[in-house]
Amino acid sequence: MKKKNTHRNTAKSFWKIGKKEFNTHIFDVNGEGELVIREGNYQYNVHELARKFGSSLEVFLPFVLEERLNGLFTTFAEEMKQAEYRGKFFYHYPMKVNQNKEAVLTLVSEGAHLEVGSVNELALVKKLWETSSVNNKIRVLCNGPKTKAYVDLIFRMWEDHLWVVPIIEDREELNLFKEYRGDLGIRVNLQTKVKSHWDKKVDRFGLSAEELFDLGRVRNLKLLHYHIGSQVERGADIIAVLKESFRVYKKLRETQPSLDTIDIGGGFAVPYEKRTMYSMEMIAKRVVGTLKALAEEAAIPHPHLIVEWGRYVVAPAQITIFKVVSEKAIPKGAARSWYIIDGSFMNDLLDTWALHQKWHIVPINNMEAKKKQRVWLAGLSCDSDDKYTARDGYVLLPRLEDLEPGQDQYVAFFDTGAYQDAFASHHCLLSSPLKIILQNGVVTIARKRETAEDIGKLFGW
Ligand SMILES: *Cc1c(COP(=O)(O)O)cnc(C)c1O
Image: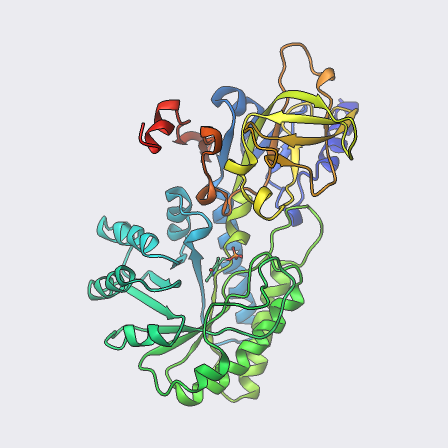
């Protein structure tokens, strides 16, 4: 027994399982060397799920969403209370990060407001509203270029008493909303540069500070918004940008006295590679402290605060599982073998291809295997780009020759809840993963595996 526990603990620490700072605290390794997920005192055996439902398989975990969102609410509430901060905190969930119904509804039911980026996302909110699934206290921020259909829908929803707030992206949009009687927000294009893939030299979103100061009085302008990019690498950058935005906010209030809210957008990073990074608690403390100090120095009321961290909340709420279907030697490379998986990076985890994103990959069976080998992973499509080489590194996984006869090796990719689904595609007409939801000890199928016929239909067959 003792020996078994030592093996388990070694496996846990090797695969970086059971660590809160890496969002892997809900995972554990059982006595059989299998990955398990804990939801309170419920437990799910991931290896069994993969064998039962087949792979490729997405496992969605709504209770993780609840935990993350509630963590944000309590932390900010506590910081604001301690600092005697008089503005309010709001979380707006950016729908584009994961528009699946099970994600959006879970967050809304925990008190999230929404942020949409297109007319079609807003149409989904309208649908929720019409079926009385949301109450009329929910607030919806509308970003993105305002096409005619988008503008019309915003007006219609406002007339139906939903609190929709268009975020103005340029001067022309301001004219489109001249007759709008609801609250307005405006997006500023800040100068501070941050360390992130998305921090472009030239940003096409929003108005410059100078343009904002020249606008003249805008009726019901309540909110100043910015979004500086995603997966921001340094916590200090989040604070530096906040400080710049406050300078704009303060000056803008001279011409726009209705302004009372700063919306700091998204950008909080996820520890995909399971390396230490800044913590939410530390950033929350600094955001509240910074805003309080700056507002008091400027002798203006503490602004209300909106946070739209999307990836932070959603990424850890899903893992994606593949089976290794074959192995092929690599004559020359950082790895010894290709493991071919029964899914596709280009279709199912597009950021692998688009951003060379790194993922945390663990076996879900044979986790205690002592001998591991350096591998690269390749997808089922015929495309030479359909691969994962850990940015020219390698992945350590158990050796297939050590498997018991008849056993398959499965692997899990962690933190796949953000962005991957909406980018999913059908290169080589491969099927998307089947999706299951684990909640309250019950496993339900959210999306069935597509048949050849289903996919053919998408292409007019
Ligand atoms: C994409 C986006 C977000 C979410 O960004 P994350 O990096 O996932 O936190 C938030 N707000 C706006 C306006 C966005 O476009």
